[in-house]
Length: 312
Image (cartoon, rainbow, N blue to C red; front, side, top):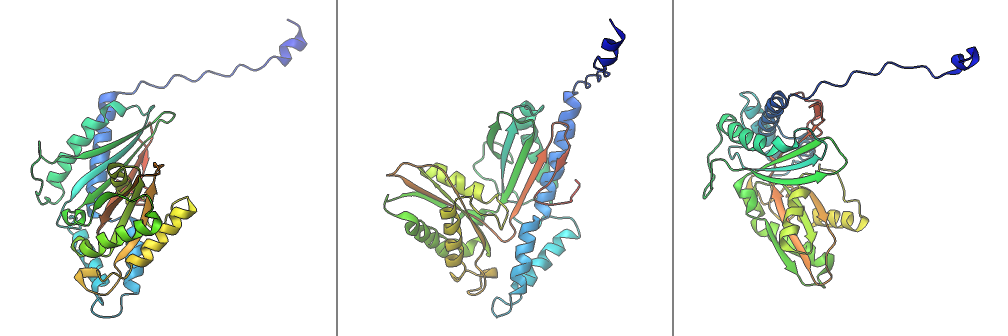
């Protein structure tokens, strides 16, 4: 080889050593510990968007009989925070939504980890109130799965809904000509008639789909979105604002008062539907809306978008 050719040859960079194989047993234990800390934390600390909205409502909480209700909510949260206890005596039915990438290294272990962690977390959290009935096993957990083909991360959303939050929930098929006004009236009727049971101010999730069951699931997913977010479709975003305005003064205020804010937020999730089928679902969260989001990388690094800056 000539000197010129040798000088122009591409340099040979050192090849990095292959990463050490993942110790699945140790990694599964680390993931289990992380999820346990996450679920326990969500039961005791409300997400930041809920705290911000409660603070906003407290600042407007002036006229009796609602006066003082906002302050009482923060006193309740402080009282639970000091001894590190649940912020609501009803530990709630824990619903878990998992979005797992196909490349997430512990995807196969997730279901077993979640089941074991939930049972342990519910035993040690407060202890919680044991209110599960007609269950096939102790402390059951409901998991909704979504798999993402080209991703190696995992996102876990949890929501703890007290039993009384389920009272205003409903789903049905409306007439095809109902339109947005029909949807708004259905949601308004349900929340106005039963919303007082669910500890206002409420968070209301609305699902629109072809069937009652898919609409109900979408309405639950809507409650996972942070307060202040809006549907990307302008028509659905307008419906969110319309519902929030109409539900704001239905006479179901904090601490069962006839006055005061009835809702904190309304969020809509929708899917394509067939023309004759106008499925509507409604789900409700109370003022102590215990919701959390945990994002986990393939190396088990994590962050909590719902509780910024928190290290578990």
